[in-house]
Amino acid sequence: MIKSDQIVLEMADEIRAGGYGRPGERFITVRQLAERFGIALTTAQKVVKRLKDKDLLIGDSTSPAKISPAAFAGTGSSGIENGFPRRLGLVVTDITNPFFSRVCRYVQRAAGDQGYQVLMSSSDTDFRRESQAIEGLLEIGVEGLLICPGLDEVCAAFYRSLVDQGVRLSFVSRRAQGVEADFVVAHNFAGGALAAGHLLSMGYDSFSYIGFGPRLKHDERLHGFRSALMEERVDFGPDRIAGGNGRDIIHGYRAMRHLMQGAERPRAVFAYNDLLAVGALQYCLEHDIAVPGEVALVGFDNLPESRVTSPPLTSVAYPIQSIARLAVQNLVDRIQCTGDRPPNRIFLEPHLVVRQSTDPRVKVTDTQLCR
Image (cartoon, rainbow, N blue to C red; front, top):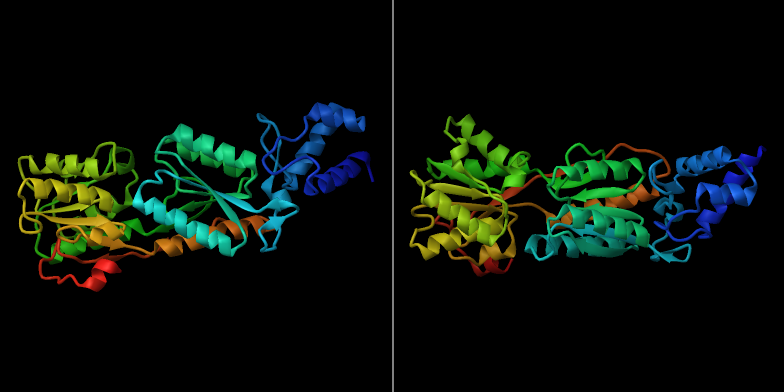
């Protein structure tokens, strides 16, 4: 056996035993490796490359090598492996949003069933914070990442670089375009089409959409809504879309004001999420606009809040708990996989929950309110 082979075997055992630190910690430099074994720098560089090929180190030629989470991956379920707690990282865009709070709760529960702790962080829709949070989680030594990515164009490039470095990650509820990684999302296009089909069936004849600027280019909910209207030869031009830079109640309020003060009021409005729809509903209530008598409203996500508005809000629902569970399973499978496998891409079908904001004939029961 040549000397470089012996060095690779020796260092591989030491890395797995924790001799060079926890996952995410910086490995020794090429120069330090060369000095320890009395080899040339070029040979030391080859050793580091082979350790990366074995998935024991991560990092490219422009950044220092770090201990790979895969070096400590095991199949036990006790929550401890090689003396270290088994940890996953979770990053969402806004943990104060009721939707993401539910995602965090379900992810934590699913990961616990698999023997993992979950370290959570919120980016506040800021890419700089998002990337810093992820780098921090990798430094701590998480074995993989569950990500609800931001919408900034640079996000996709960042996640592609992580995948190229061998970082295990799984997208939850939202995916970054063009990244070869596992994801579990709702079928947003189908959900948008469901909303349009329902409004058309109720006899509404003019439509608008409330979204937010950074999302509109890749907004599958909008695309599905527009496509279903176009199939019925219903006009839906750019002037029917209220964009902007927010996706909360305040933005929904402002967007609805813009639509209702326009030259032609819509008879039905579909919002990107329930919070936007709640804001739109608040505007209507404050300005004596009858819902659904003068304008109908549909949201997306079916948050508990949508059941207790006045009137209760029609919303597109999908299984958030299943999204979290499948995303965790994707990531655990990726961690435990000994070889390469193609990304596992899962779309879950939505369904429409019809309430009084679109159909005044629907009777609200205590079961509906507490469900």
